[in-house]
Length: 357
Ligand SMILES: *Cc1c(COP(=O)(O)O)cnc(C)c1O
Image 1 (cartoon, rainbow, N blue to C red):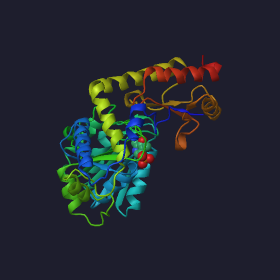
Image 2: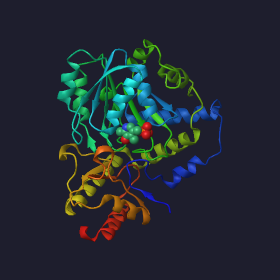
Image 3: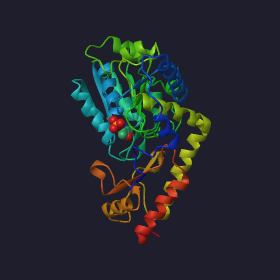
Image 4: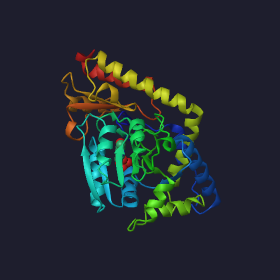
């Protein structure tokens, strides 16, 4: 049975997008691809609110997260870690042979501007990584306040993962001074997985030029050289780029402001439902994600059983990630989701667990 996805990625994909992916193939060295590439990267700059170069990589997000480390960490990197994905990024940084320190926060809490300032004021670091929206814990860190601190450290590469937030909230990449902003497309952008997008500031490209062992597949300078011809270094996932072209048009038709408002309202709606049904959110109120809600299992329900029975009813439900599996659950409200979609899930939950009603 098909399950409707309420997990935080991959998420439901609109039928228009699936249709766009079925378009006939073109060659990536043909002028048709150059037109598509130019249109998509122009749209992405509008979405990301930047004039920096924006590149298309055929990989999931972690491909570019690894690439960013290989291209931009020259000396030592500060990896800010407040959940499973940021912990993993620290691990990846070290596996790339880079010197790196993890600056850790309790799960459920954000990366703070104070901690960023304290770490970088040591002068030890030439780069930092952080995740704007920690999907494992449902925490959104205060990116604008952190960006303010980063202005004091212009020589430190500011590398930000926005995998589960880009397009759902306003992230003005240029104004925030983000040197490399990375996202995959299967979360907040609501496409099938396999494509990652990243921006690179002028400073980032200069940094990359001075770094050896950038490899080939994620070499930022290869991306820049090819992008100048509206192209990619190697054969891209053209079907997904058709899908992104379609999704960008759908986003601009909805309106970016309207899209941000919709996500804000959906987040409030989910939190409201949880409170009424006796649950508490895992993160503190000030840092709740706008694209997924991570709830404590305050009612002590059997989450594994709920997940199984929701699956039988046609819903994919998430019973927590990593070390908070079973004690928390997550409801995604990203991408193209509407209130009516959430109502379907809530109705099913109450039917399966009558004590919730
Ligand atoms: C899902 C996720 C990733 C990992 O993405 P892949 O596409 O699986 O490589 C990284 N960061 C965040 C915040 C995520 O939610």
